[in-house]
Length: 373
Image (cartoon, rainbow, N blue to C red; front, side, top):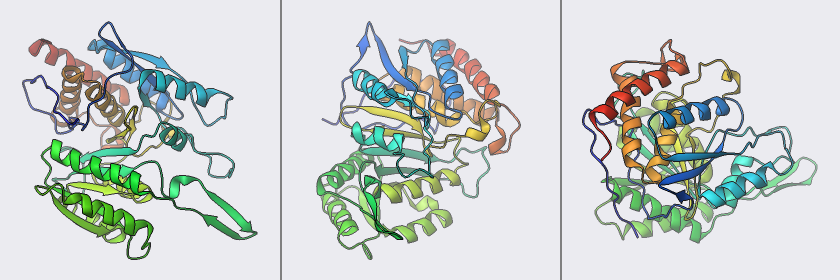
């Protein structure tokens, strides 16, 4: 089931932000005449302008992708969620901006969570790696964070029993813990990673997190070449901000994964840099790692497009379009590291368009030097 896919070598400096090998074998659902059809969900905030940038980049480098765009937003339009789910089920793959969740309305269910649960996108995967020219407190960070994406505190089961007393139900199952654990170890194996750290709170949540810890530890016995360790979530948070280089692959339940992932994104430069993959057995949705809408930045051409570009590269890798994934990734890396085209959030003065335009120029040169075979 798990096999490595071929990569076409690209001359020049390989990008450290290249998407890793994704475990498993998945057949594309919507590939016709050598082209893939994917669903684009612009979402709220900066999402629409970022999706436009991705379309521009793909068109420029002739990536074999057609987009079916479906708008889903926080405005509760009748039928928009059903249309999005149908499009993803038809195409198998989507790239999305974040959809704002209304915190002040108890009846409003997060549409981001709804997508993940209804499509059973059980694994959220982020690769947080140091970009040498981006200011940060630590160097040498290279961490993969794997988060269970469909249960735990995100079950949405909560109620007020009597005024002033609220019960929120955390549900975990052996089946879902086993498959996220398997994903973590297979990911480590496929990418030559040496250690998997399970993050938990089993000292307090002895049954729920105790089951998580037991399942991951038991599964580690099947992977003797990969070191296993367990760490309580509060200690893991402290260790992450003090010595992040000690971590390799981290696997976590849903809520801890959300928190730890955001810490890790902050350590390497912030929300504009890291992409996130949401994978299931049948479908995949690609987005930014921190899932921010960036509403205050919308329409100003100042939002960092790096995370969205990396998400598009993740999607290309998933679809087996390795040539275009490598070209775009290397071109973006050159813009960030060699040319130092940086937006304001990472200490620069460039616009989003500047980053995209530099990436396009680099793509053109790389394609001339490395024509597709």
